[in-house]
Image 1 (cartoon, rainbow, N blue to C red):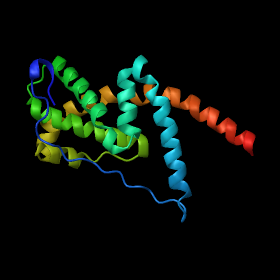
Image 2 (spheres, helix red, strand yellow):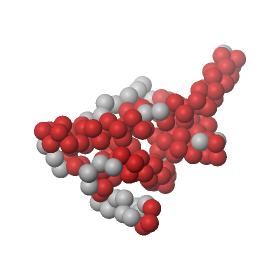
Image 3 (spheres, rainbow, N blue to C red):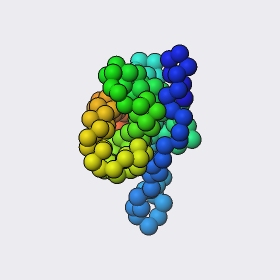
Image 4 (cartoon, rainbow, N blue to C red):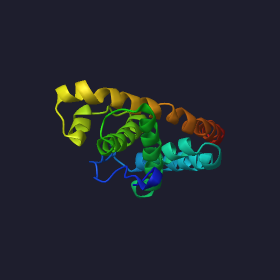
Length: 174
């Protein structure tokens, strides 16, 4: 991934998080419903592409199937790295880009599935121990996370309208 003036943002592949499907009932009804709901969310988020591209990218990075998330995650990474450039921090850009990519994946899992972010994995991405993390990296982590925190609300605003409409149809059908 390259940024401004063909400057390398990320060269080393960071460890990725893999979401596990939470088992529901014994039949596949819950998985089918989850897929339908995610499809509705993806459709609503896709409409944001023109009006709020960053919210669109977050919504797709969080809800779209893994194979189709690459472009949106790259856009979010580019956004976070441009924010990092404004901070004028002395941290190595390559390491920050790895942390930013982990942050995007972890925040998406947190917001979609309610999973806690394991900062031990973030330390593994950087190759540092807890002391060094607390001393040098936790500040950057929090800043990256704060840049992503408003995006779910922006992306899911239109989704709430779809959900309300969907609920209305379900009530009318019953």
